[in-house]
Length: 396
Image (tube, rainbow, N blue to C red; front, side):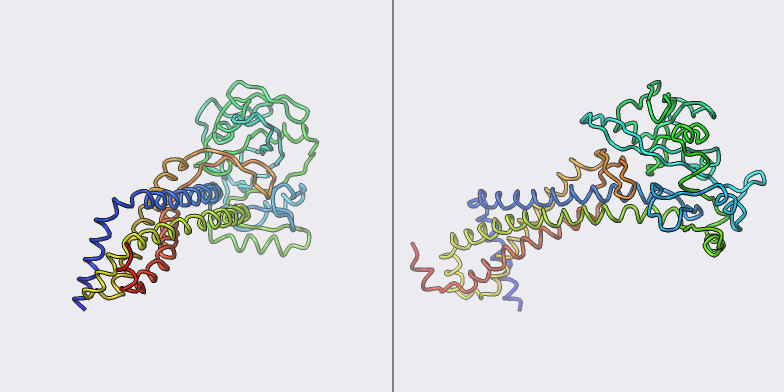
């Protein structure tokens, strides 16, 4: 066994010393794999960034109430009697003796993107004072809050970064009114940073909503109060509502885009990976052909086929590892933190987010590169191990 390992070590050292003579083909394999890894990490970081925005939204002690059957705020309608019943349900936190329930409007407005100038659907939310109690993470970072009863809006920092006309002092025309931008707010990186907020008492008549709301955000007395609150509302025959934790609602919103992005990444990177695989095969076959006489000589003096085969696979894995690391680092430098906006397929509105190149993504992509290297080195390795000694020695 010791002899077997010493042969393997000697062959690996021999491969490393002869690598400079094959630097061209080896470099092509490395950068082919690096390209695949960079694309894979870049595409998947879109889904990770979107997921991060969604999962950063809400808390376990906040519930969202929608009309039964609605899959988003866009398709939900709550009447005033629904809100009265929600306010009397058990398990709700109180402030100054009043239940903390935030009835909210949700409308879509058009704003041009800063990057392209094309119009995009942007969510605009009508809120009451309770909204800032339910979402304590919302903080004004520039300017001031909108005035109650005034045609004023505040803009999430994500929306401000992505869309024109959202600078403080700008005027926007939505519904039947003109609105002045008076502030920019942050919300711990949540989806609310993609929105515009205004006083619901002003927004409702501008869109002829009357006393209708889309959703009710409820601050619970504790996370453990959720089931009691939910059971009370869903068992009331007067109501036709569904109740979810806010965290669960936004996690489900992220699922569809993540599946789409993951599917796209698999298709694109499978095709690119196939090209990189053929590149690795070509590189290793070339390496074996160039050293066929050397390999035959080694076998003639007592080296067995096992160490020869493993040494070829080890070389392919090293090249793949180098390519994988280069691609992952390049993707991190190019994409991590890059801000963009994409469509939330549930509400058909834009969500501003930042690409998120996580360590898990980078490691997974490097493993994918090693898989390419393993397959790319396996067949040339088998050929090297089975190479007839007499035939190889007769080659010029």
